[in-house]
Length: 371
Image (cartoon, rainbow, N blue to C red; front, side, top):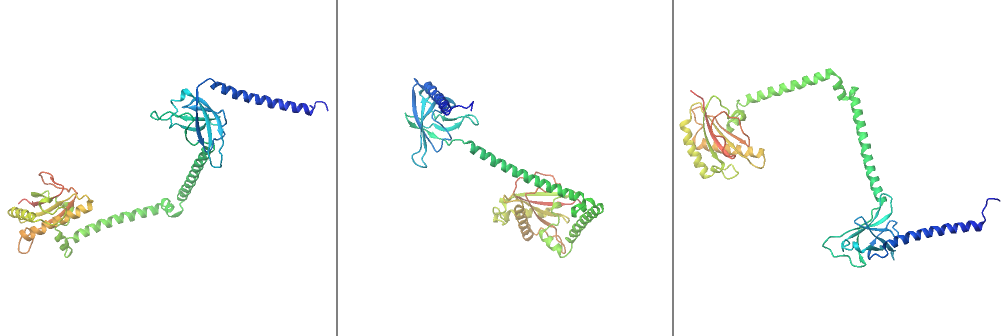
């Protein structure tokens, strides 16, 4: 049939095309080799577990500069052994390729040709000897990068799905409340229920206020008053607030009275208190109130500081009452002597005088109303 080539001519054309391609490849190789012909070069070896499609004649770069070619690729002799590359490198780069230099198979661009990139070693390391072995870094494979990106995108997608589900639940709850369904929905939509709730809240606040007043009154009744009398005060917030009275005051450091960090009086502390008792007695009048206030900055916390200061104040009160009788007032009555531990608290006062000098101290105060 006209137009068909004989078989022998088709085979000849095919062989001719293959020959042209072979000559072209050989020409490219010769051109690449000619580039380094006549130049001084040196050889280096490097071993990789895999080379990711690297071919002989592939470029070798030093710090991004075209510096040589892959001369030979030696396949592994046994399974598990590395692939060895023999590199031909421009001698002018020899001072950069030190014994601690590293080599890595990389891709030019995203999907470009594979190259061997050499990172120069440290300036203090000796130059790599002829045929020396370079250190290696694992090649960066595009598949690994894409796999990591895919896993990250999957995690982001899972977070987005969870966020959409959570938002849907919130919208459903809001719609239920707006429709007046459920306990909260009835409360929001029903004005009468809201008014009842507010009325109950107000009544609760009034009940608590009445209870506080009743408890305050009970403090002055027998036998509950006996408990508060032993402590010497009923209202800690007001014990130092006497705007109508004259105040006589003495301050002692904790170390002058107690063993460190304890509520046990020392022998010297008892002597100091006896001297204070002698100072107090001439100042005591019929309506004089005595307050023993202790302060402490225990580093273990405010609660322990207040507890220790309360015990110290009560120890001082017990000694002055037992040894000096500062509570004595008449045959059938006794003077109020309050013992109060404030811990780290700064109480409200109305008397004039120098401020606290020591964070750990005991103050003795006499409040006498004017005649």
